[in-house]
Image (cartoon, rainbow, N blue to C red; front, side, top):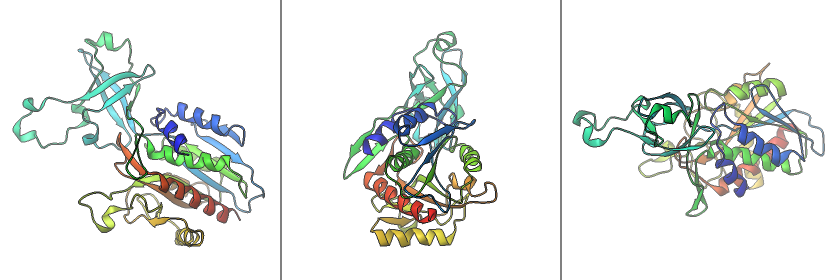
Length: 338
């Protein structure tokens, strides 16, 4: 699964431009499951198990990553852009990027510090004040390589470091996608549905249509979530801790989860010896927010891989948390199915 996470993360696929990720997943699962693509671009997969399921279970992971999109080209060849998804401007300053279908190299630039007024030195730059330098000398030259509406993604190496840590862009949520692919490739006890959804980062749009089509009784969103286990952060403010296993949410800004399912996750984890921890802050949101309101309502749970520096070019997870998440999600899915 580690190699699969690497290959998925190195693909480009900001919200609404997930084609390369979807094609990769299809190549991985085409010989062991049935699949279709809905009009929005979601990849819907049915995997037959050894037994029919009493309850229809849907497992969801989103394919898209946060990024940028070209909004204007200046007369001197620089690109203006806006964010696609929730990105802190502080994490993109000076970063290298790839732009458009031709994967043009670029650098996110800002006004030199010696030209900034003293009173504004501590201000966080707004996206409107930033630009991308692709080395063009004019608008006409830039337009030979780039068009308005072209997607922009971060260039970031996949690095293994420390005691089992991984650094890359797009771990949110390519790590979740890898977990689902592993499940599809394995022998399942019960029939199961999978959704590799689009446009989560801009409003959980794909999951809404996927859940309507699949019409599950239960659903599990397989995600990454903020781990703030870093210097200067204490106790519950750490949210979750890298290395302590899959993270189960009791509430976030889009979903108040069933206490019955939340308790069941920890019961199964204890019984099976799976590393598991609670998400200790009510923050963020994910595809569960759209799924649980679909049709007549769906019972949902979110299991996440702890991730430091979320929504940045340098997300960090610990690989054994991905393995624990796979074990927990598989056990929960079987429990819900029967």
